[in-house]
Image (cartoon, rainbow, N blue to C red):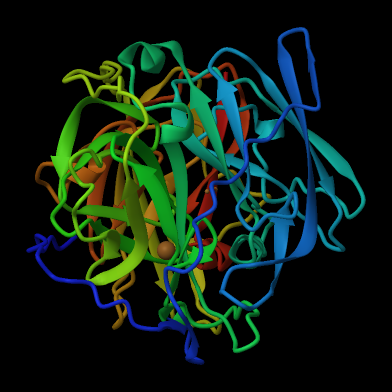
Length: 459
Ligand code: C2O
Ligand code: CU
């Protein structure tokens, strides 16, 4: 990953927004960024919260003045947020009101194989499927999305994505900004035609960046600290984010809080990854407007107003220690590449395209393993691939034979591999579950083309 430091000081020139390749224009920063509503349980019995969420086609407002047909959870382009507590199980009844197959995967969730949204384990049109989420893991920013074999890219692109947040006691003690000051922000790109319809075209034309499903919105904030949970839900994109030199305090990655906060001026987030930051807007009242930029492009404006009352939140110098790594007893190599001689190209893991009937490797429950993940693409146009593993989080030991990057810190379930990149990761399969789980490229167009494999957890 190239790291050009941000040199700050540039004044944003918010020109009319450009939509995809068709150049539909709109006036940016006229609409407020929505915060996805928190879903309320339809039932709470015996310490279990049960939610009901229809999956249905709906028209949504993304581009000012236009309507966009989408596939949605509960009618919203960014589905409702489920806020769970560690140790308290959740059941979600997903009702498939689409005219096609779908399913739901909880990305980052430690769940049984039957509840993991295996690509062949689908919900028929008209059917309801209840997924059990035990929440036996650290507090973290997870997300739920479609994982239908071969259609995951199309479905997620059209809106089948939402946040699932787990809160835990360790986090509570830290007194981080919470409640309405704890804001999930789903970032993704898209391409639209002049009527506002999503175009499932070439990734390079998906130039409109959406923040919680809005193109260039503004977000009113008080002059105090906020926790932002950033998710890259793009099918294929790497965000390089900055706030024009304003420091962002990174506190968490995919699998939960870091051992200690780190101040960053730039964040690099590839598809599927999450980064949590705290931004302090106190003392920013009189400033010219603050923006979140992708490179030089403003994608979200923060409008700072006076805070009501004192900000009692804090960012302690120590957060939550990482679990001990332990000694690994198994080493494996996993490569990702394309067979470009095929039309369309075929995605490969260790030289083979995904076969739902084939188990690619077996892992013993409780085993600690080191995997070397290699981007083996030697095509003329080199591809990058974010590697994602289901069921457990890992730690990155090294990258390209050297130390990990700042982006690799903490507990991860998705890690970026630039062309010819290699990372070594370590994880312990500490799980009561057995069965089949996916690992794949999180460019969902690549996984749909076969860049996916499955491991079987065995006793
Ligand atoms: Cu976010 Cu296998 O997926
Ligand atoms: Cu890929």
